[in-house]
Image 1: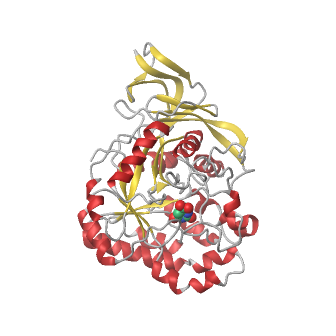
Image 2: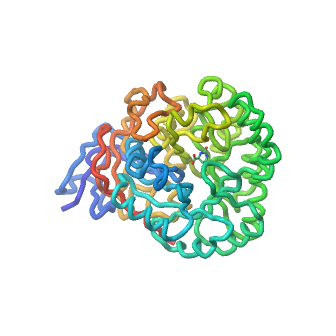
Image 3: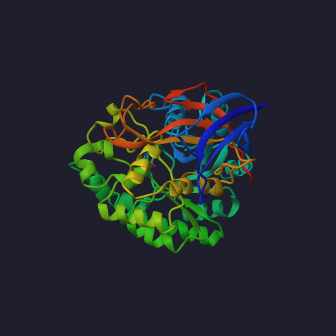
Length: 436
Ligand code: DOR
């Protein structure tokens, strides 16, 4: 007897024609796909619904430990499964920062109890923790190393070239970077200090700050003979540059940078639109869309960065950077799908196939033997994004009031129904296994 059969849904795999079939899952893995599969302990009727490989959000900030008034692993993972996300990778800028094996193991232990979605954590690099980084190389539940090349939320920062090179030469797991030049940010700090409004945020953290840092880190990757995963690219210049550097990098963009632009976002939302790297002008956004379609972009990550409305609504520059997003990433992509800017195949590529490849996971395809993670959608349902429906402790979304066609209806996490029709069930998320 199978654990779960999802019946009669339209299965859509990357670069394949849709097929209507049943999916049987046992012990967390897809066991059989076909019809008349037999008995199961649990059944889900997916008639009229579209089933895509379980989506992976490879960049979230869930704030536990230390800042759990903003988010914790329970609320963050609840938001994830409500948004059709089966797996998340969480960042190390918690309090204290996650920079040792011990701290990663603590997070894994907590997530095993509390997480509704499958999970892995990044370990942060500091100037002197190479020994700790080496300890996590084969640890299931650690997806890689995160480096803040420019300062953002929290106290993680590392931009000394010789230390970066040492890490790049000695570490084989994925290395993900927040790429803004700390030196240039400091040289121009007077722009921030004399700012009269949040519009000065993207003048201070300008396109050149991002480009200089990205060029530097690609040089380091080249010299070390390995790749770097460059997070949340925000400028057209970086996209143009990275297009010819694909041997040395993988590239992420966020739905925020693909959807919001300056000055309009700052005019209408003020400090709620503040994030690092910043929301920039429309020409940059167009460069990101081009990069997405010409193969430069590998993944979409939410950079879910929850802060409470109270914290966000203080005057710039004392307002924190970041917006929630794990629950709205897929809905926003469905909005862009309706507008003809992206198709479902590309969404599967950027949020299932490619993250699975980059991080060596047994995920990304609805095929026998793959992990039993499914994102189930009603592509025809019209609904409204609201603040009230957000499970994040932040309790708001920059996208409230948007009309969306297409809704995550069910999220299957390792063969368990984690979310069905906006109801979230008992946490059963598992550590992500790495196939390195
Ligand atoms: O805007 C941001 N917020 N960018 C980051 O890199 C960090 C994030 C956060 O953790 O708040």
